[in-house]
Length: 384
Image (cartoon, rainbow, N blue to C red):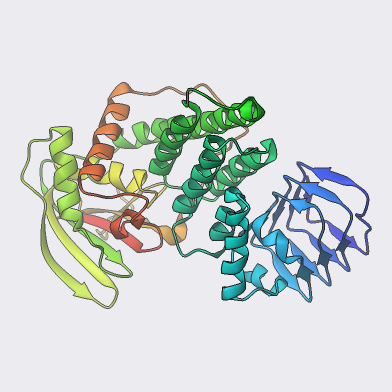
């Protein structure tokens, strides 16, 4: 791991570099032409006067900048780029990208074609991730060799996105299900057994991350105030979603067996799109699971509206929970695999809410009908 390091006129030719991480670093007058570099991460790294080509495959370039630099066009299908600043390093226009993708498909290189979509798609990141897994499944089904590095690369992308809170917990469930559908095949060509083993490793990472999230959610559920009073929920979107949040809350309430009045929209405002919903506070556990499951917030905090906010709160003090996606923090540490203490009730409730989302047609494929981190700006509630 190299953090805040500068590489000036360094020669990386004729070396093998793998499982290396560069963070907040810079490369000046940097040339790679005959180097085997794979499964590395470049995070917030600057490349100036860099020429990158050759066997540079299955690396992650996240929030990197390229100044007077170029990359071989074939690397667009063999590496993952998070952000848009990398586009200046390639001499590819829209038509050329599509032609390149079609050539890969014609050559049965479905995974690398899916990576192009990952780098050049307006889809949610989770959707692109699932498409890559499906591409590996298609290759395995057709007895096309899947490289172990390709599966490890996808696992690395997932973990990198998890660290940045860019993958909703519900997506981990979908990934587990898709991988299961791939590895359960009765007849698998022996040439792909190692790739299948790596898919199982990938699935285990997803399973662990989901269980870790469940553990955090269980603690948050216990802190939700229920005073048997009415609340007003305010949710701000960039654009109006396909489905009303009130309908989603009522579906989840029904699945959880919560007995209370339905949530209902009371008014809307324009500018962005602002939705106001009236509901009993018994519905707050539903709201908390939904926003957490869809990755709309990683944490919630209380803020009093009273001028007496410095004094001890009473149960009657008007309160607001504010979820602002601009202030999401990530306390996850994938290297700290502690024993997880879970409550079975939270897991049961979560799966019931997942069922409610499915019943309402909220899926990765349709960008969660607008309930995603790209569209939801803020959620708050206050007691009447």
